[in-house]
Length: 91
Image 1 (cartoon, rainbow, N blue to C red):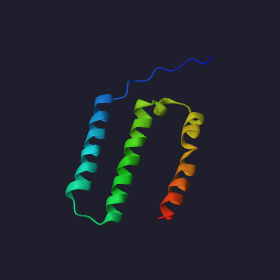
Image 2: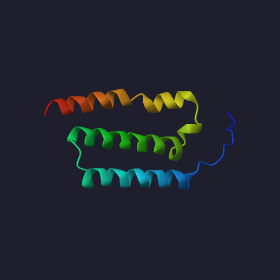
Image 3: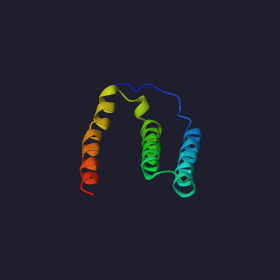
Image 4: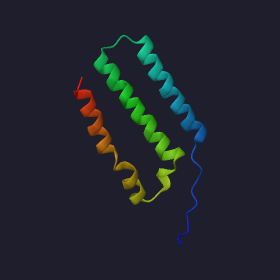
């Protein structure tokens, strides 16, 4: 059985604050900014992806895992992207 290496605890409070700021930015962007729908959608998607990466890296502890687990976690993303494009293209 492999020995697990000790690592420093992630800065949970800092990550939580960044997630809160991103969430408030998403709400502010969607409610109070008058931007074209394309840029609104792009901005919201980018912020959502950034939040998902932060959650996966720090709260799911993927940052401290070996590369093979990263590959396992990331491998469904191309399929999800294809499925979203297929649904969007129908409208």
